[in-house]
Length: 110
Image 1 (cartoon, rainbow, N blue to C red):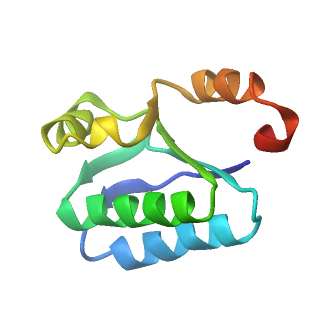
Image 2 (image 1 turned 90 degrees about the vertical axis):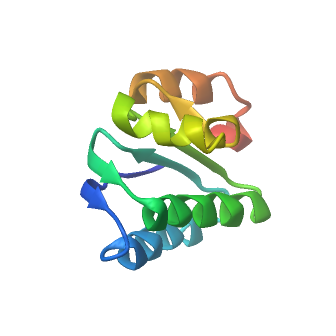
């Protein structure tokens, strides 16, 4: 499992670098389980949201698990308004995510 912990603002200025971090996390292991811990993210604009959507699309193409956790209420509303909360796997905490993956068969949880 790889945990990516962005902080501050995810926007057009730093979105490309964040996208590269996510791509690197997924390409390091073909059976990657990537968790984006958003606890320290203060804001997310449309460019930042598109980086997450692109990463999710790549993960789905590669048959990898891509999840989010610790999304603040102010950022969660962005996912709800765009109905992306139905597309992304969002966990309240890292512990909730870890509990969910511990229930999976070993080949998926590793």
